[in-house]
Amino acid sequence: MAARAVGMSEPQIPEEGPRVGYKRPPPATQFKKGRSGNPKGRPRTRHRQIPYDSVLGQMVTVREDGRERRITAAEAFILQLTQKGLAGDSAAARASLAAIEEARGKREPDKDLEITRIIICSFGVGSALRILGLGVKKYPLDKQKVRWELEPWIVEAALSRLDAGALSKDEQREVWMNTRTPDKVCWPAWWAEKG
Image 1 (cartoon, one colour):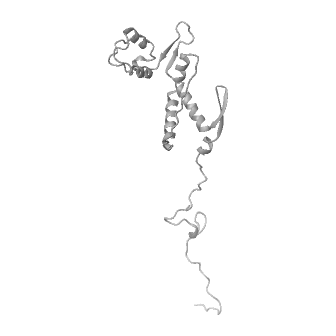
Image 2: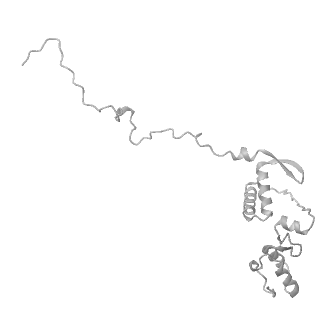
């Protein structure tokens, strides 16, 4: 055995602890089990919602019949959908009606409900039929064959108001000939002429 010098201590051997280095972070900085690594979560401002109120609330200028007026973008949107629906675009008509019903549902019931009357001025019955979506102009470029055909739903609505025998066979034949798609009409039981 070797003698020890006085005042000298034994060399310190490092304790066996976790090894730290490449791909081995210190345990104090590692994520703890059962605890989120991101306790605050994703910032709320990262994905903002579309600002519907500020966009649809903006005032826009609309020109109707040569006159300009200012309305909100939401009103302009509904107006555009309604016009497309009246022009015969059934998808736009459904979207317009859905938006109107949703707006009515949100509105508080009003005892003093205003009634708005819409008057359409046109140069003839044909343009009113087209604007209201009641009929379609067939052969518009041929002056010999040009005519209006009524939509099936308006024919059904008109026939539901009539009693049996109200139309003669000639009148029934004329209604049949001037219906756009007569096969889609639900004809009343008293109807005799088809084709």
